[in-house]
Length: 279
Image 1 (cartoon, helix red, strand yellow):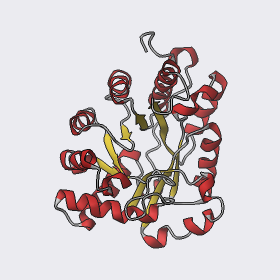
Image 2 (cartoon, rainbow, N blue to C red):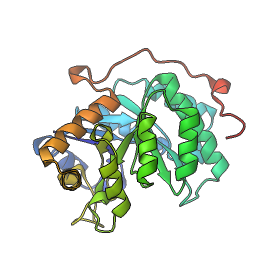
Image 3 (cartoon, rainbow, N blue to C red):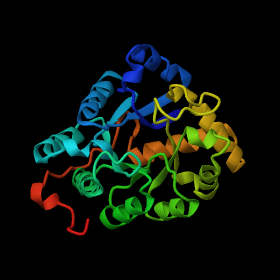
């Protein structure tokens, strides 16, 4: 069975055939998908997909490109969505210095606030980091390490930094990039990280694996990612599939029919959740 730990099926790229495509997932061995919140609207759509499809779970969070839309009232609404039964993570949250749609201080502020939310509601995190590797790592280490765990999504930094994240208890998200001929660093990461800390993802509709690079991605292409990892690690595809599936269930705390371990979740703390002044 295959588990896609990071997808965006609420994206408009799926508007014409979303139901038809999702109907193919379980017959094709895709047993689980976590649909990521990215914007406030995307968070709501992720909840709708999770309500509609038994194999889809939701993550609640606002992408760094969208954090300018957040305020205290909207953050409070995110806390409420985190308490829904099929919400399994806070994400995708983090830093993006490539597009720079929001200034760095604003990104850091809401990154820390959402990390605090994850701790308050006892959910793992799913982290976006683009051209911001060191700042992301420093904030994660200072504000979240040793708490609720999570996944560093679409990992693009060095193998050494990947090992440091694993030491802090995080999982490394591997997607279509690992199949690209020029993805030397990603292949080094896959070779360096213990298999019990690797999960697979699509980030669909983006980052389709070769030979579909440049086309719309979907969870149906994940066997190509599994094959690439197997080749790097000297394992069989079935071994990689089984291990990454188990890793996904572990990090998202999804246990059989109970869906996830519903531990007692905390309350919204308002002012108490503000980041430290140096962030």
